[in-house]
Length: 380
Ligand code: ASP
Image 1: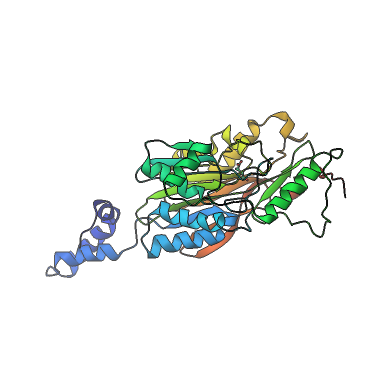
Image 2: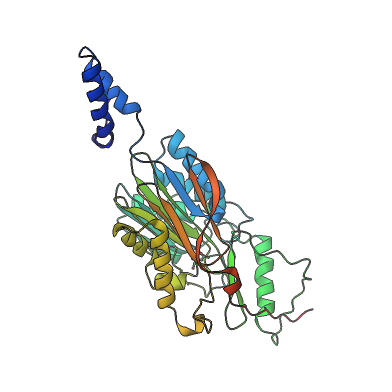
């Protein structure tokens, strides 16, 4: 059985220890047994998968694929996010994602494969439920990194992806309700009673902007490291609900929605993309980890940078953001962390202790969260 150079180097300390033992214990111990002992010693890196809270099923699947099936980290995390992309009940990604202002679902996704230093991305992709896989196909089959709009869809169809209507009945109704709530003196009536109204999507966080128009955000980001220290990252989303057609957020932006440097770590984001794009959040987190910060510290320092870079209209009088944004980080050495502005959010982790939700570090206590304005509707 061959042992790779990386694995051999990674276990060289254990091998050296075993050699020392063998020399002193018995000069007759065959040399091969020393190498075998090194092979079965602890892996050089601990496999870990981290994701946004809606990735709790996904991290379990990805961790299982990485540890039991020896799957590539990117294949594993894409299989993880595919669960949400194909779940019509998750209104923040893929099938069932909330549409743009014209009722059209437009999806963004990007990925990075650490060991081969490659990336792929799609923006404003319509009618294909798994933009994460299309982003990977851009990476695998083209010399480009990003395809958008009609070109991205044409490419996906050429790659064999299936075209389908992504607007579920639930998302269509929510879109109509948003239209009805948009302007109290226009011609759209809110025909739904409160009891008939859908609860907000569980996987999503929301904010109300100062114009009293409710937008909903939600996305899934996932990052992984395997026992060889190889890493990948992926982010996929239907973006900001009711967005202007053609708007792309941070998710498909390499360095904002996700980033992976195989020698350092991986990071990603969910929440208000416009706030993240300006600080290249995922890239910045990886750079902070490269400088020696822990994943938690790197995420929190990036939240600070976001606030420092936020325009006045999106801050309350005390300088607190009127939006949600979450960062997730995974160091190559297996440490993981996250941060967000306000108390209460959690993120998903899967490692040798199992898959679980972990509270995120926050900057402001729940009680400090600014009051968001009510959505005003004209009833039928
Ligand atoms: N970050 C996504 C975007 O801005 C939305 C979200 O995560 O909720 O498109």
